[in-house]
Length: 338
Image 1 (cartoon, helix red, strand yellow):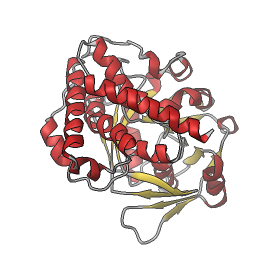
Image 2 (tube, one colour):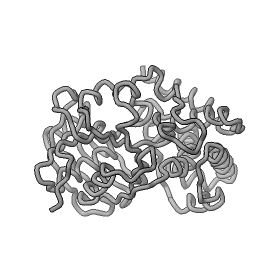
Image 3 (cartoon, helix red, strand yellow):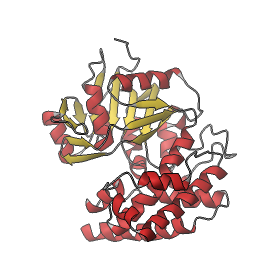
Image 4 (cartoon, helix red, strand yellow):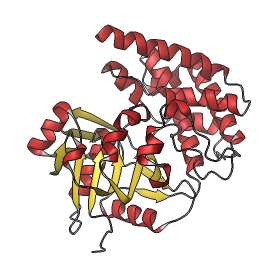
């Protein structure tokens, strides 16, 4: 078996996607590789007691994987590879914990929806190289404590949900796209891709990860907030002509902002809408969070589309309206839980 240079691997935020990757890595029998996770609450206690039970799509029984689990990253030794399963709005608070896991050569794979905090690092196409997106890293903690030079971007097409503490269910076979911010095909990214492939993760390497980020964001910026506002599944939204038209308007705004920043999205809005009609009765992650009375992932998915639109003088009127509505929804939803 091919040896991996990453002997100590931590998944920080072992929820749905993070938990699925941790389970696959822990069950892959990599020689001398130690897998750990940082989690919290009942999910953490269940992982400590019985590992992670991962239900693959249409599986008759789960894959059960044991691993070291903690809520305190300081209990772990420095890691060769950290994979974050946190959402964009959760990263700033987690930065000090992630920093405890780093040594001089640690790489950090960040699985994120929406525009990431490191977006303009080594960006050669937008004209805004090293521009900092303040709302994604308000105090500069991510840049200071982790550093964009460590990051490998990751775009995930994987439906997943924590259905019970310690139990993750996948909706499809999934696909993960990795990319260095520079677009280079480095030894690190090739080794990480190979490691994940051996663990059964469907993964590819992109030389234009920002294109992949925007391509996925076309859907997320529309369906996530609209589903939260309406409590609708994706199929419900696409079955309503007015809502489907709103989805198309948001997609057009996202595409225009992306192209103004030098990215290319091959699929047209019409093609993306048609593909969306085939997805079925999916409950988006934002709707899941709303129903669980968790903070919504608003800024990376919607807020940054609006702010970057202002940066490049692209109007985003529909996204701006949705941003105001879903921000107030989030505030009222969490206020009611207090």
